[in-house]
Structures are given as structure tokens and as C-alpha cells.
Length: 83
Image 1 (spheres, rainbow, N blue to C red):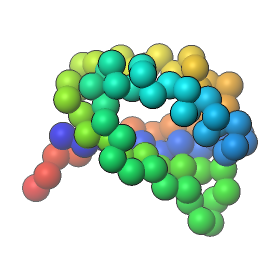
Image 2: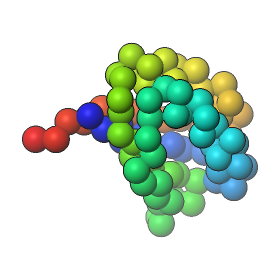
Image 3: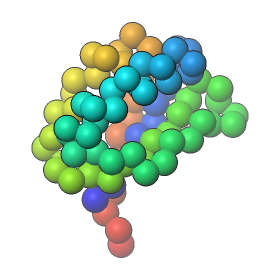
Image 4: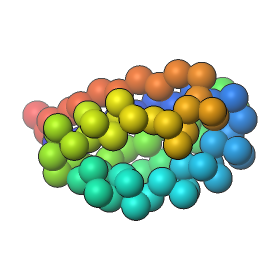
């Protein structure tokens, strides 16, 4: 299973600094970052693709965005399975 995450930030640079510091919590949640994209047309939007080892832990990580909340306007999560 994968997680595609759209992240709308207040400030992409500040968000990236906070995001980079949450690597351990993502790993503990069973999330493996596969790709991180910066949206060319929306400077404060990023997209992240993760491999998901455990859906429940990934949901818990998404619900606890406290480390990133100051830098996020919104986020949208999509859990996907290979067809």
C-alpha cells in the first residue's frame, strides 16, 4: 500500500526544515518516503509518496501532525493500492 500526501504549506522552506526533523516519527509509523515533489505551479505545495507498512500506524501519524501543524495550511491523504 502507498500513501500519496498533498501538503499545502504557509512557507515551503520552513515546512521542509520541520518535515526533515520528523523522519524518525515517520519511520516509527511504518512510512517509507519514496518520493517528495515540489509543485512547480504552487510554490507552497508539496506532494509526498510513501510506502505504508501498517495502515493504523500511518493513520495515527497523520492524525498527529503537531510537529508540522505550524507550517501547514491543509493536507490531503490518499491511501492507494497497486491495481
